[in-house]
Length: 187
Length: 434
Image (tube, rainbow over all chains, first blue to last red; front, side, top):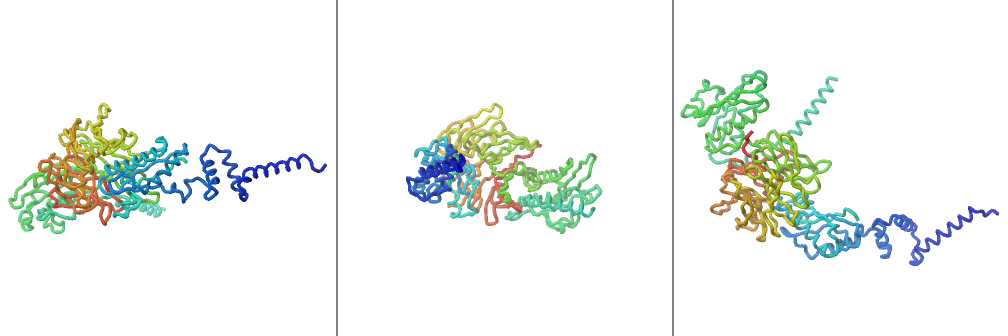
């Protein structure tokens, strides 16, 4: 009678664990990834966060990138800056894919929220530039809401010429400053 | 122990001095008027004891007059004599110098830490006194009295009211170990006595003096979005006047001080509104899908000029300050913005894009002629002196971001710079009524 209750329970526990693991990975026939399993387990218990949803997405796409798509350097979501021509708030064709990607992310992640920060280069007058920066942020917001994002998820602020990223006084610097920055407040 | 205290004290003093030295706005004349008039300004006499008067009155007046580019004070070392009373003046001494005018003065301490300042202006060739005054100064007021002497002398000799007893507000930006630090400061018109009104890690812009100079309106990003504040300069107390969603900017006081024009985008896009201080009422003046901003009042309070791109690019428009139809004023070039009236109401100063260079220009309201005043490329924020003689503005050149001043005829130019950091957003105060 050496195999007492304790041992029986231990064997039972191990069996259940193995069964549980097989249940998760069995259908995909992947190598077991204990870290992933643990992550799955922990995010499973905090399912309210989009982290869990993001992790699920990563695994389902074949494991090429695991993690929140916002952190995937190969995704268009990694682009957080839209650039503009001088005195213009027109969104150029080359940025429409990026804006669409963010709009779709917002549309599918209702708890995500962003601030669109409008900026201009240093030329001209400050208050007119504050208004110009706002135009740019609003243009991006409008496009995002047309593509499915909710206006509630998007805040805008204009910094005009007050927050340059490039300190120079030539077109090489100015074109980097004429921008809208997409800043995620929540994911 | 004593040595430690002394060294410690010196270190503190050095730090304060260093901080103060960095904070002083130094003014250089970069172009003087041809034929600047020689004038002899003698160091003022001092009848108190100790090492001398708390301020070098003669030097302050000489520097004031020199800064106009219209006067060339004789170097102190070249003065043949130092009279401080009319009886001591020997006119033949001064005729040899070839100077038409001689200014002498004296400072005497009076009870209660106050001072009596006497000064006399002479016509050297006529050997006669032009004017003579006695002014009373409180403790710490001597610099201000010196500027008042300059105002009186300048008006007597040129016929134009002086603007030396005035102040300037400006914004500074400094890179520090903990990031950028911004400050809104006020100094005397010669750059001395700088005081910090607001200090922040967030930007601020558009300082605007109330008509009597006792309050300053400005825009601050300290809450993470731009809001308009009005601050009482004597008490330091302030209140937020506009903090709506979107833009709150470009505050401009009506000449009677009862209203503030401002730019708000709470109703969809940048529009001009007028806020009534008394009732708190907000009146909307523009309603269109274009940008309308940078309103400025005419001296009679009847009109507002403002920047609008309703015609495609930024241009200057004028409308009645009580509301009504706007008329376009500028048609030259594809960018005219940030207009403000000259004190005589006959011209506007504005920012004009001259073939890619952003320059300060004058627009004559009667003839519609546009005259470009500067040759730099990144000019903004022009502000008239209250006597209409000089225009203060912000510029960025190879030497950095600084303030500059140009006379209305373009003949006199100055540069106003800090030792460390950028300066911008100047606003010249009204005449002092204190």
